[in-house]
Amino acid sequence: MRRGGEGVRPAILHARDLAGCEHRLALDVSHPQLAADRPRTAEAVRRTEAANSHRDRVRDLLRAMHSDQPPGTFVIIGPERTSERVAATLRACADGASWIWNATLPTDVDGGRRGHSELLARVGDGYLPVIVVNHRVSYPAKVRRDLTPDATPFLTSPLWGWLPTHDPYRTGRNHRRDQMRLAHLTQMLLDLGLAPSGDESRLLGGSIGLDADCIVVHRTGTLLREYREVFTRRQAVASGDVLTAARRVSECRSCPWWPRCEPELVQRRDVSLVASGNQADLLVESGVTTIDQLARHRGPAPQSWPSNIAFDDAVSTAIAWLADIPLIRRVEEPQVRRADVEVDVDMESYGEDGAYMWGTLLTDRVESDRPVIYRAFVTWQPLPTRDEARSFAEFWTWLMAERAGAHAQGKTFAAYCYSQQAENRWLRSTVDRFADADGIPPRADVEDFIASDEWVDIYEAVGANFVCPQGKGLKRIAPVAGFTWRDAEAGGAASMDWYKRAVGLDGVDVDLSQRDRLLEYNEDDVRATKVLREWMVEPAARALPLRDDLLAFRQSGSDSRTTASDSHAHRA
Image (tube, rainbow, N blue to C red; front, top):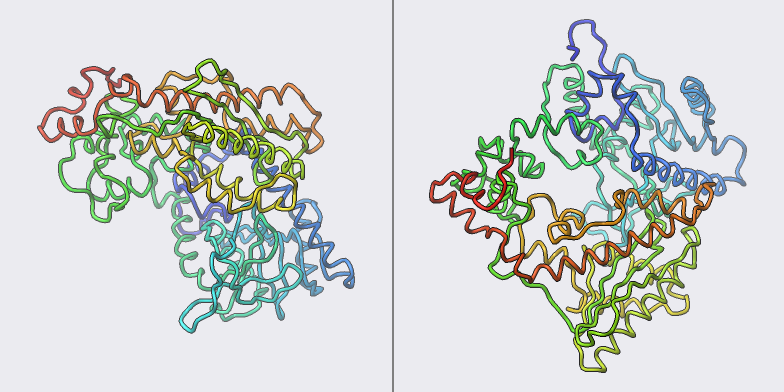
């Protein structure tokens, strides 16, 4: 790993290098060829394509808004080589263009900065950055947020012009990566003498999110102090003056360096393997660096430990990792709501474009001769499409008819999903977007159903009944109950690629076999939910180790690795 020093130029950092794992940055810089040659995962390709498609839509929307204005108002920098884009950007700035799309700033070799902004907006005699991102940057406010003397106004601007105004109908969603990128671009504009003002406290920037209905205004000047501290540290990481080590964080799931880092973490039994990023930091600060130390820990939780997370869960998770225990009971008798008529539900969506499938599996526990049938309500018209309203209306009508039929026969009813956050989002979104379509229920009906005890989240039930050392995802938990997916590649990321081929997105030839694959995948998800919730109240679940028993081994001074392993294989 290279070291900084007198006369050594700094590493060239992009805004994406300023957030996330420092060790990844160190590996990227110290092994540039490996970083350049590594293959991109299908999920990474999908995310890039989705982001590019969103940016193209925003570009076309903005270009249309300015189509009646004089030439040179809205300038689009072409996809030429980087040096040509830089030259074209600087010419557009010199010509005083009001908006510059696909702006590329000159690389600051001495300062160590490289930057690109989807948009530069002219304000006074300078420019401010506006980035376009493929996630939401604001949400409708639950109540009108009137401006009060002691409140900081939430500012937005219309897409057609830079007019920052307090917006009482929206609330912001902070994204650290967005903030660091805007600060990075603002610093580059300052260094180039292109910023609207030398008074940093007045500098602003903007972001256009997934809804593309406004520009959310950011006070970038107030971010510059933190940005400069982060930038200085990241430069020290890149130069090797600040040494880093592998640790498990959330981005490891998609990091190409994970196959290299994981064996290192396992070898040293790093505590981050069983504790999330912030929790691991607190443990390390208190002197607990290994899973073995955490498993034997008898003192109180570290200072500042999150109040909503039981420290005993962290300790029992460490014991389970050492003893290779996949699941731990919290309670003597796991419980989950059951009903006479049970419907398992799983929804499939494509990015932010809509929900194209609602899969169901009905079980009548009173009429045992009634077949357990999988039903899918689906549209194969490429999203976004109004046919989504038709498929959802059919699903909702069928579900409510089964519910009403059960009630009429004096039967109890329950519908189940795994992690209702996703299903609830699309239940609400679909009725809002297609409120005028046939068969779409009022929003109030959907809210009443979501709030009822007949809509059961098995993800929440799993968390209430078990400690999950290997995670709480359905693909992690259902195999403990004996369920196996038929498709070895089944997963959310893979299903995105299957959907693209199933409907022929982006010029891809339609492959009807991928529709069958998606139906099978969805059916397996609802069957996995059914198998898991039924297993939770069976003797096999009650045979799992009890959390309090594992903790008692620790309290008694026994070797938790050995004692907890009496009926389980010990991890090598």
